[in-house]
Image (cartoon, rainbow, N blue to C red; front, side, top):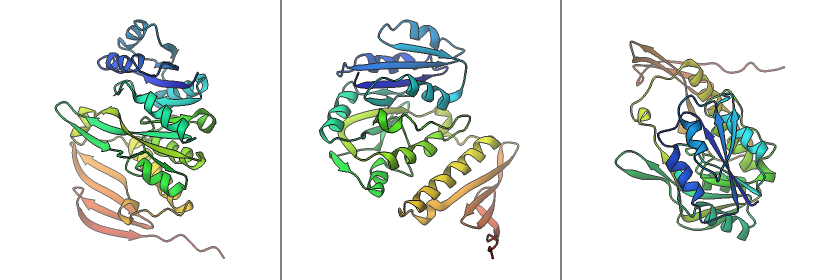
Length: 286
């Protein structure tokens, strides 16, 4: 088996068939499709039963990370790819990524990303050339990090990722997982002319109110990403080191935003009017 495709499935009956159709009709045939039904409460489970060419694993709900971890443990392919169940891929997606990975002896092969909304599409990443990268800073830039810490527009050597688990019970798990994989991989190759189609959540078009947990997880993930850049001595724009730490709402109106830059916290009224700046340096150890 050359490629295992892991599809976490949770309450996506509206979009699931398009996702699965794009996978079972791939031009590359030496692949297994592993759908992890993560406790879906809608008709997703019944849709999975309609497809004979997939392998279904049913489990109690563990979240996106838990479903991906289950898929990695079950995967038998030389390479592993991830496809979210409300997205889809070009029909030659895995053929082109596989050919580029094998030709360049690469641990990771990356495709372009198209963000699909209801009435239009827009490239999020658009690779024009097949390029090979080995230095960590070059791999990071080629993957589009920090803006695009996505796991699903790529295939990975299973040997590289088999011991790198997604952190469970957190949001923004991709931000935590992707840098670890890039650090371990020896070669990354970009592949032109093939696309992953990412379906934008309509709710994300309008700014939504994040729960306190989601805010904390975002803050933690961004802190970890900045730390990664610093440890690997990769240049990061100073603006990207400014992290939103907290938001406070009253009657669905954003009344306070707290942003952090190094040792300084900046408080914004209504999210954009700065009014307090507090700096606390860590105590010096004698």
